[in-house]
Image (cartoon, rainbow, N blue to C red):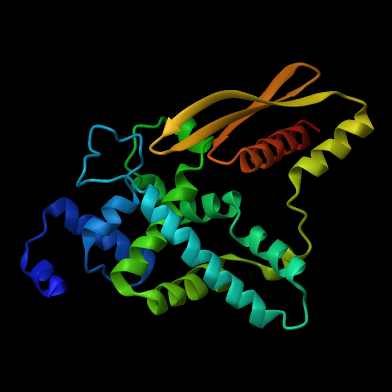
Length: 242
């Protein structure tokens, strides 16, 4: 009944363009376009968020769970002899913030994300990755688990992820950074420079400094994720300088 009623309501030109962009990303047209609008509505769009127009935080929570379940089953079947520790590590490599950020950029989320963040703020936060998970949550509600699973497997894992590379990639950037600093005999420190309330969650801004000199800052709702990401950024910058 909901799908029939939605089909009878004419879409605006802007909504038609949005619907077509979703089709290009997903491979199918959405039924309930409002769900996908919410998926791209960042909490910083405070002037638009009301009781009826919510941010993408709840949708992100759902999408994160769906993505984790699909990836877990995929790895369970792909590596039938591997233990829980290996499977957990591989799953974290697939669903980490950097991968989600890269995928969201490939899919053109920079044109779809509805936020009041500056370009720099978008790049130094988890906004893109959060929107990616929220999109999966929207697909799950709109189309069901099997459709969402098919999209994750066929449009993400099989096309955009190199399993061989992931097998041999060390994503513990904090450990890599610590080893480098020990070799160079330099002091470093992770500092919480800001704590903001984003909806019902806290957002931490973690700064990484070397010998007292700030190198980079990254924001996330998880301190651990923010520390890993800022360590990765500084490592990549040091490699470029070399």
